[in-house]
Length: 100
Image (cartoon, rainbow, N blue to C red; front, side, top):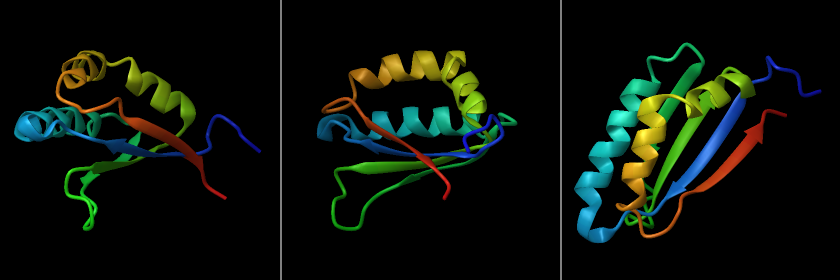
């Protein structure tokens, strides 16, 4: 069953440009801090795989798909993603997951 109140999990694979890692990290942390103030955001953590320090993983949980949809329309997300476009080696890979 996939109702509006079902939690939504996300795994976002992020590949920052190696020459702009600090800028990318600062932009992501700013977006993360703003996101954590949203009532629909349960958690959002920027992580780094132990075996691949040049790739980052953002782990996210939202209370519902509609909460995430609202999140994606926030100015700091829209503008932040535009800024990130120049700071990444390739577009981020976004995986949406449902709890089983």
